[in-house]
Image 1 (cartoon, rainbow over the protein chains, first blue to last red):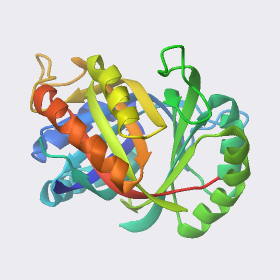
Image 2: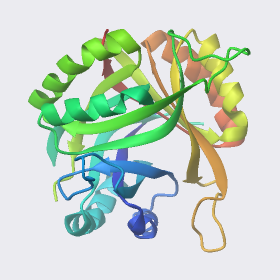
Image 3: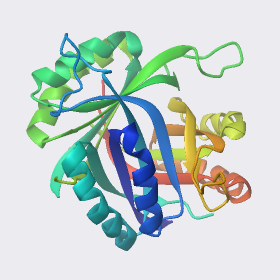
Length: 97
Length: 97
Length: 97
């Protein structure tokens, strides 16, 4: 099994094409995307009851080598700075096949 | 990047408001929620073929400091004890922006 | 909390029953499944614009002891070899309840 970085990005779905472009520019050739994700963060996303489901978000799950991960994070940082959202990175093993 | 705990909770969707309340009480100001999640566990969730999709579950993904994580887990434990469900905690890095 | 392996499998949804069978054969008694997952990988999954959503995938999230994890990975490897897909394994803590 290969050591990889697991990158998880949640942001408003209006930015999904931008993130796909960044993934490809970072040299990463595969990703998983979950649509219809609800979220609440410090930028808003609450309805009258203080609860959720106001924004439609998308969640990307990406496995990448450390170098490609760094390239993606550098591109993501200004986007998340402007639009909010979450990006978590953790260590994982990729089952080679 | 900040060290955080990544908390993943899967439980029946009837409990989603309770979990949102616990997240806020723990002092965590953001989370991601996936609806329409299928699951099967040792409490049931199997149809006549022994397969899945019987219960509609919800999956929360939360990033929190270690202290806030501990507070949330203490609140979650009795709920999961009563209702079943899964809670996984792992180490992650949060991309600051 | 118990040390477990968190296994995340993304593959075409036509294989979901096969994966459920493998999970049970490995002696794992619970799992979470997300449907309607979009993906793009080096086996295809791109439309005319080079973007995504061509394949309907399913994402499994599984927590297992190390031994059961190894048994599942051995069964999964030939399936992923033939059909493509992604399998990531990471360390996590399971909240006992």
